[in-house]
Image (cartoon, rainbow, N blue to C red; front, side):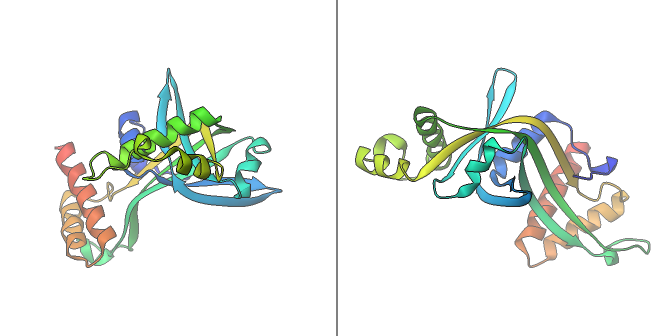
Length: 207
């Protein structure tokens, strides 16, 4: 991913938080030279000094069979994004698009059945624990679990390289920056409002 110096993110904690908050990723591999992709929820794990992404997909999805032939896989995570009008600047310029994105490169392997069960239990814990009627792993019947497990395949990706970009108008002066935040809040678009929140948070953090 091409990342100008203004927008490059290297802080490990910040990148981890971003992945945890935007964990529905796009997994890309190649099959006979053709890129193929699957969109799915992923979890970021750490074992010792090594980071892994874990997840699962339908057994009938042919992509998992490419893990053996692909030297590297790519996972893309995206956060809020929004159009920025040049009418929001003090001086004449061109419009642009603000965004947050993380690319993770690594090597993929298949989880065994016990590893898959543990990963699914953690996934349910992450998304269900705050719900009123939480459906956790131990509340599901063994019969249902046995049936559903036959239809999926688990995998983990050992992280080799991470590229992260936060394009948040860092190259604009303070007045322009604040005006962009204000204008994004006024937009009738959820992504624009979310981008305004991200930019405002960065502004407070940098003070």
